[in-house]
Amino acid sequence: MEMKTISLPRLNQLNPTLESTALKLMEEAGELAQVIGKYRGLSGEKVELDQEMVIRQIACELLDVAQTAVTMMFVMEEQFGVNIESALQEHRSKLERKGYISG
Ligand SMILES: [Mg+2]
Image (cartoon, rainbow, N blue to C red; front, side):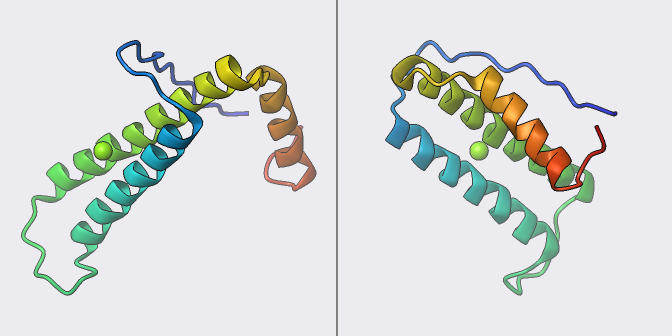
């Protein structure tokens, strides 16, 4: 099975909470939607952006989403005692059960 493995740091200059990271996640998801919308000209404005630049920007925003998700995982572990490893196993089982991957 092909896997995408990325490592993202625990940010040590912040004091994230469940609420602040959840909000930040939505904010970053919004930025991702915004740059895709711009790229596709979804709001009717003329698209004059360099495609390669926009694609890079989309990747950047996507990584912001991933970073914020990882930050939220640290919050869940450290402040709520959640075992992300076992949650990950359950997640994989769910993907198999739903037929998205074959075990
Ligand atoms: Mg961003």
